[in-house]
Length: 217
Ligand SMILES: Cc1cc2nc3c(=O)[nH]c(=O)nc-3n(C[C@H](O)[C@H](O)[C@H](O)COP(=O)(O)O)c2cc1C
Image (cartoon, rainbow, N blue to C red; front, side, top):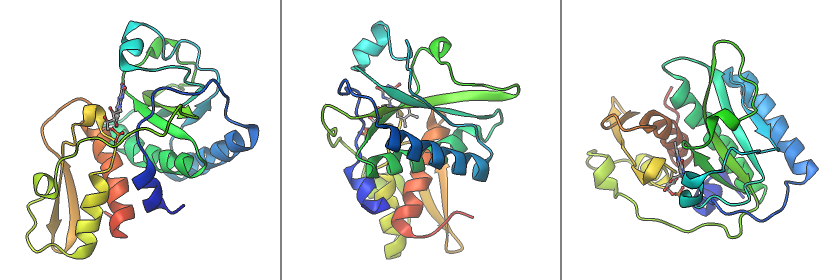
């Protein structure tokens, strides 16, 4: 499965089978996290004992059930941590999809129940539920190209990037991002200041790069 196929196949899954992630797959995920932690100076962790992180009334309303594991998105607390967590965490989400696993980003969870190691100066931005879903999720409504870019006569690579970004998960499916071109280079920004919008932007930029084959740097 290519990155783009993983983007197309991925949907948020909140209800999981009562089944742990096999040791080899958990190991593959840990190796990936180690590599990305080094590359981006993050402290992401795979936590296989979820405890009460997805418990309580709100979690029930959200539809969480039998979440077997989660990835704690931890990093040095800074203005840029949320966008970075979105960008790097989505790489992990897509690799998980390739391993046959399902995922769902979660901004609302029982923070105090999270057992991830958070060192001094670090912050737990949010978590990603991961495991075998009872199904592989469903497609949802989406904004259109013209809602999220005003570029006229856009190059094919730019269009492919924005189309991939429109498939990105965003908090409450808010899709509050906007793509433009500046001197032939892609630029992405948040629209408004909704909660988790910076995280969403990082995720959308990850998808854009995969769809377009271009980077933001
Ligand atoms: C930053 C972020 C936070 C999210 N938080 C939650 C959450 O707390 N609870 C939940 O059920 N879904 C959460 N989601 C999942 C979104 O609701 C989901 O991505 C969106 O509805 C789009 O659906 P899709 O992922 O299937 O494309 C979150 C997604 C993102 C990106």
